Length: 212
Length: 212
Image (cartoon, rainbow over all chains, first blue to last red; front, side, top):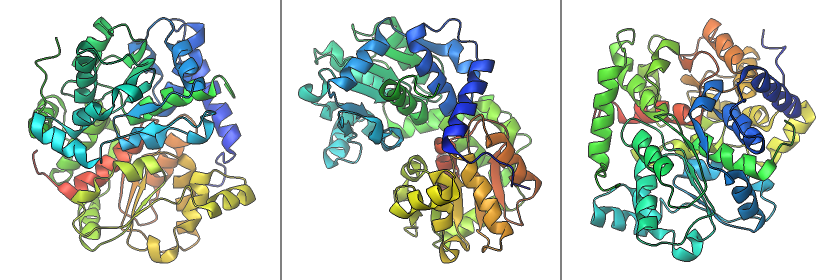
């Protein structure tokens, strides 16, 4: 019978966070990043992502400050943008994803690249400066962002770099980790990543330790 | 330097599928489900999900036939609905997610349950009959679907059961696996799952083996 399952949303969250804190080894996670790590584990169901998690010093504070300052959140996919709990963004921060913008397809064709990477060129300087960038799908989007920073684009406040997959995901995240161009970052080394993880990192910055 | 990365979308897909087929052990996957397994691995970056993958006999054929018949796709989260590549749905199948429907909140409050589960009650009989159900987030949605089937609701054509997390995910999928109420299913045992996996399963049914 399916009668006995837990239904109350607050109770489900509380029990999830209790299990995560019981099972996950958070000893290597800085105290200010614990809520972020817990929420990311919650999003993927895997406690062992902690070993691959890299959070630059001050990244959490930078992300929280950016959200409080009303910074936009630039997403590489609609899955990321729809995973962000907009009701928890106190400043009604703008959530931007330009993958379906007609200009994106034209840029992608012109540059023989993915639409995910092409839309990074539509993150105009005024959007990019001080923004939170959340990449949860495409390695090419993270590579293109690093190129734009090398070309002199304004610095975002935080890069959440979580592309997933077999081609370029590990490599693009290694490039971010090796030289983040002076930008605070959160990333997950290796092939794992994804929209749910990227969105959960944004949600953690917005929600903090509540309920944990 | 980030200069050398692969940018061409078709080449990225081809190389991804090549690596997956090289590294993943697909020997236990029935031939008709291989493209599905490959696309799910592609979505999460983990070859070892194959060990947890359960596909009922005829599930792939049932899903393909339902899509071709124009069946709606009922999703438990906006992340799932936005992960489905609608351009690849030849029958312009309706993608339904009622999580933000005002009635969903009222049902959730009345039944002291999650909004994810509450919206399952808005999958009316005419929608549910012959539909593809794609659950990528909430265990409570899968539990509630099984309850509705026990209450006599019409049978969907296929249940893609991929809830994720620490409370109820493994249990709800075990309940589906133990007794799918006569409905063909695809599921992933254990805590892993997620919107990207659920959407990738739908996309696999729509796209088939193309590029693989």
